[in-house]
Amino acid sequence: MPTRDSPVPTGAPSASDRSPAATHGTLDTNRALGGLALAATVAVALGSMAAAANGHRFGFGSVTARLDVGVTVLFVLIGYLLYLPFARALTGGTSPPGVRRYARTRPVQLLPAYWVALLVAAFVYERAQPMTAVDLAQYLTLTNIYSPGNLLGPIPVAWAVATAAAFCVFVPALAWAISRGPSGDEARRVRTQWVGLVAMVAVAIVFRAWVVSSDAAELTVIARKSWLFNHLDTFAAGMALALVQVVDERRRARGAANAPTAAIWRRASLVAAAVAAVAFGAVVALGLSRQALVLSAPQEWARHLLYLAVGTGAVAAVIAGTRAPWFAAAERRRRCRGAWAGGPPASPTGCCCGTAW
Image 1: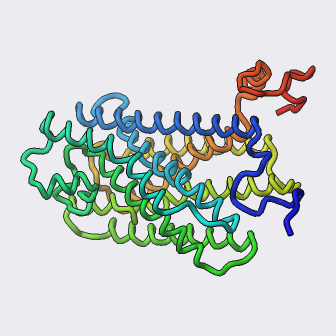
Image 2 (image 1 turned 45 degrees about the vertical axis):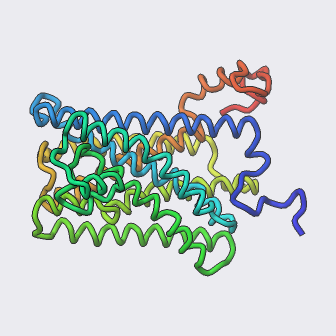
Image 3 (image 1 turned 120 degrees about the vertical axis):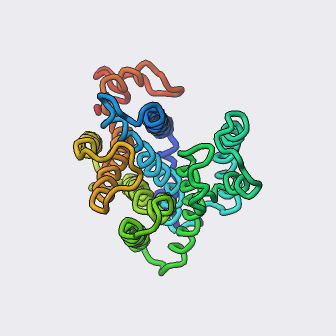
């Protein structure tokens, strides 16, 4: 029978995780991830405006042409955020989030803003005329990416919204399939999730190899590149980061001696940021076409892998950085001033609770 001193057997946070410090850390993580999402969105917008202005034909055009990497960053981030509660439930052996509640909340968060922007772009700015009722229905339901003729509609970058919507449907289905696998101890449940992520990567590789080697019409190739299958490995990267975090959370809850220290998380954050920066510099240096949407097969693979390194590195840097903040001195001063409610007083060492970073 479990006792008060038994390890927490579920994916839910323990009592210690609900302390003010843990809550403060969660808020810091949410703010940092929100800032990253905003930066990625702005990058995509700037790249789109530069393309519409003069096709990136200016001094920094080689850089602005690669700002669409912000979509990859967002996909990795979405994979992390959506899979995190499922990873906690699957790892802890508890029931995943309810599908009905998930189905109600995710579309509500995603669709209204898109619908408003779509209708304004289509009927106020008249960016997609003429438009039939079938066309409008496809745009409203985010199924236009499966019809090459309607791929680039009133909002050209809306294909990313459609791909993310497909992933929202995919996540609970994958979690259900994993939960129906062989039961066992926690280590086996974690391995089962890794197998699922590896399978996603394998499907993406096979599908992408088919797309880039096909001789279909250019618009058809572009449409297929927007399908979820082509981005499963990108989403899997974010899901892997979520699983790594959950494993670390449970190790800390059990007081495991091999749990990564703050110094390790800080070094991991810096390494991940360096990987993202180097990968972005490399993809700029490749000298890829600034306007073409379809490249040769080797160029497609090189761009995808470097974009994936940028997205994974950027998200990993933020996640690891918030678990051991980069700016430790500023964070320590802010905590010691009692910036969060109920915080402990500053110790004579200048750190909260006498704990150094």
